[in-house]
Image (cartoon, rainbow, N blue to C red; front, side, top):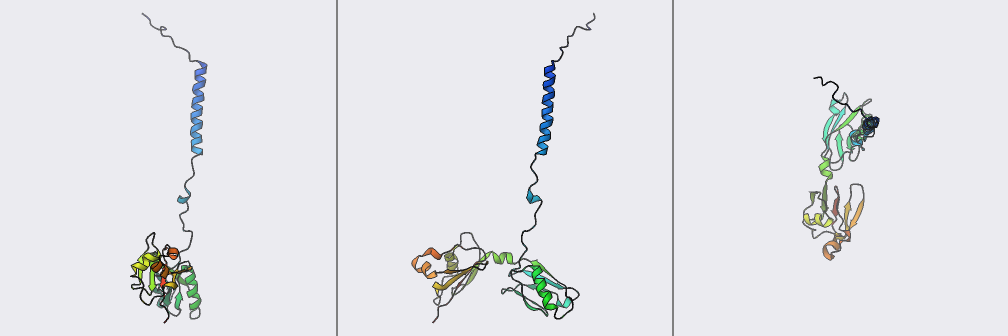
Length: 216
């Protein structure tokens, strides 16, 4: 028996074909749009450079090299007064300067003694990072101290950690020095004796409090 031709194939509707084509076109279009509208790479992955030049601080170690003059080249730490000693150039102020600025200063000094000096300055150890993150109290306190900064520290906190004032202190003339050069008067007498907290300032990394002795 011949079964050929007994199966019936239903012709697809032209509307269904058109609908399928439209759906496929939308998918392709959406795929293209998704690619073209993807967010650009974060700016942080393209620019990771520093915005400011490093400035030398107390505790840093410098390598100062004078080309073809090994006897003038030195490895020196930055002293608490912000200076270093360089052969022929003498004491050079380096604190809060960039290595390039220090190089220029030393070059000018050495040019009086040698012809066309070429000086490079490299920071080999950034010890100032720890130095700048501390707070200090000096002068007429029982235990002058340098303490790691803690968030929330105040003038009273650091003075108490220093053992309080000596009998020779002049608490009304204490001063807070900020590393940006700001100078702020502190009334420790009011803080300690009267509970007047108007000058009990919150401290910042690098702050220094000095308490003078009273005049006799």
